[in-house]
Length: 246
Image (cartoon, rainbow, N blue to C red; front, side, top):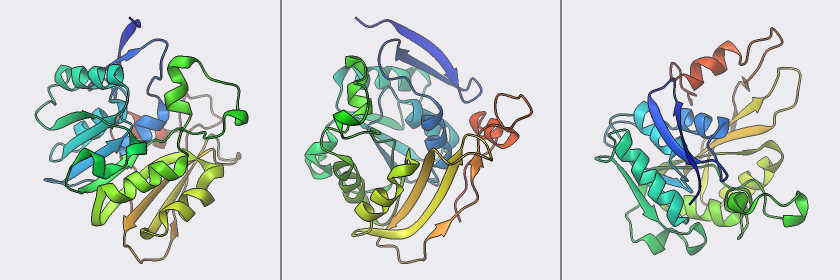
């Protein structure tokens, strides 16, 4: 059995048990949770929730919404359920076992008001050194990025929001894959430093949306003053601020 650690995220408000050797939630999960803009009474789905790092942080940030996580790894799904109970969120956080490659309809659920995801960053095994076996599912999209965008597009009702975080160099692919079903794109670049190119993008789209694309002010994670994070990033990671959309 994998060794498990218990960590604190969102300034200690979320207790997160996760494996030492497998995928561990980090900055991407924290930013995805901050970008979740669901309101009271809304239903939100996360595709590939892992142990629940983004899902539970989003649920704490949005106490009026209900959340469903979909995860294909039985062990990760079990940890996510355990974490939901650990944080007293089991009444509005549900974890289902399911594979994105099988499509949203395979779950037999009604469309959600919003869906979010941090899809695996690679779909070409030749593009990087093979990750550890325990991390391959989180790093490699076996059926390509298209399977994830198709799942998310089907998962939301008309007018529903799709939010994902991914590599900045895949932005064109993300827009092209979502465009047949969604529009009203908003894009927030995430830069490691103000003088360095963005490494991540957070993309929000509305199913059947028709508003013009908006490129939002970037989030700069670090400054040169020696602090671990910029003031804006620190506030977001602590849960004192969100990543707003227009």
